[in-house]
Image 1 (cartoon, rainbow, N blue to C red):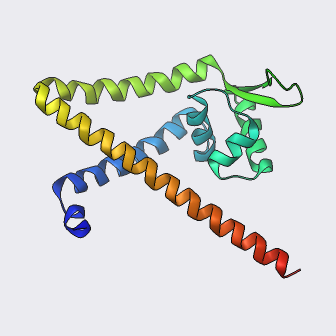
Image 2 (image 1 turned 60 degrees about the horizontal axis):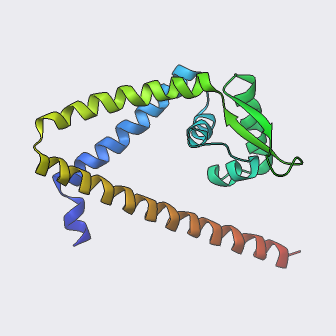
Length: 166
């Protein structure tokens, strides 16, 4: 059954959308003068403030690598470190308003272009599109969590194996 679904027109078009998203991301990185990892951090910070360790975890980076990302974002004027509200020993990273507006402007341009397509759909068709997109989002979130769990299990196994070999 899964093989039949992978061959559908919808599946083919979704793969094209995913690939186009990756291409757009490459160009947005170049437009903003940053590396892909820095842009990924910036995208996470669009959702709100994060601590460096949460950023490292979300990006799959070491603490040192995440610190380097935050350093680059700060140096480029995209983000700033702030004291944690409850624990002054910790810091939070916040996206600066100008960078947030720049990213949001690009997101809005894409949303306007794709949203205009829906004007030609009747209510039932729009509901079907929304249902498909919500289901796709849910499936991708589940897949992301599954992959993250497999990576964590692999890393835990490698760490345990390394400790046993000492």
